Image 1 (cartoon, helix red, strand yellow):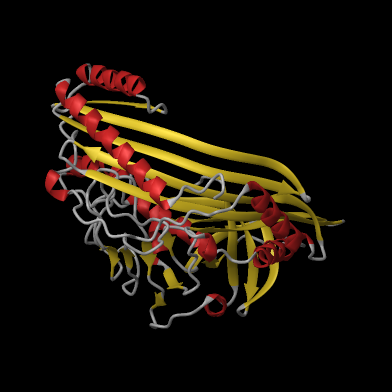
Image 2 (image 1 turned 60 degrees about the vertical axis):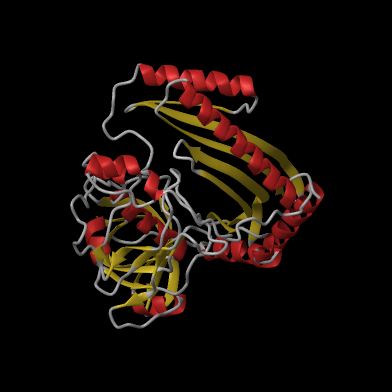
Length: 455
């Protein structure tokens, strides 16, 4: 057994220990006068190795503990946390949380999620796959990945390869009597390369992220992909300013969906800082498009049986026939809006953007290039020029100019701009080329038109 992998039995013992600790603290909080209390406790362990030019740069072993508790005295709330799980530190943290609550203004929306919404079923979602890799093996794998990439003619340097193995154990408990245990693993590989000649230099990378190490692409495939992406950028040029169709590669398409989530999430809505305020039941995307939350996907990057407040997660539509079916709410934001929690305290759980188009056809990436015809394929965006309040979108970009469905040449030094409202309404197609490395599962997304500003 390596120094990072926690065995099956030991992980269950650790979860039991965290659960007992959480329940004990909740009892003590009630004894101190709190009307409600909740605890989130976690233990994260990991190994991270970075190699560059065949040499080890860093080796890091982590074992992080977290213990956060919130107490409510009526509707006055106090929170405190510690990284030390010994009883004296936890008692001091509890005392601090109680002191804060006693001096805090009452908030009518404060309190635990409704007791009737607590999860009662906890099926195994296949999220626990400890990777039995030791430091020497991780270094060797990193070297193999880097060598595979550097073997390509034209690659002049490397920014390094990384190998990471991680495991997390967590318990959420509250004074409704709810105790939820979760354990999951996340492992990743990555490589960044540099290509250069007398005309300039380019850098690009690739990575893989999985729950189970057996699901990784091979070291050779990862190195090849990073090298191909880097070399493809050589000779990049700018474009003249124009309006044209834009195709977002899958790993960037999920960012567009992330902007949708930001605009329909409770915090933005109750602060009235969203361009999609009061849009439930209204059309925001084409009528053929559906987006569903699926929290219970086996090995899903965002799978979970309950949210950060213990509320049971359920399959649920977000966009149905182009119409916004609901918001994304925890109990606090729901109360602020006079609505019910959607089981999304702490975020979304596996969002699936269904492939499709107005003509009903499903197409892979090559098919999406054909749909694009002549326009811009975006493979990188830069900057923070996105406003959830107005929907205005303006970001630096790089990618490829496409003519007649074929990549013509790489481009850089451009800005792409539009308004998210028009971008969402103007989605032409979603590809079947789904990027599975995220909890937002989408293929490439083709937009009817954006402004591309260049020279």
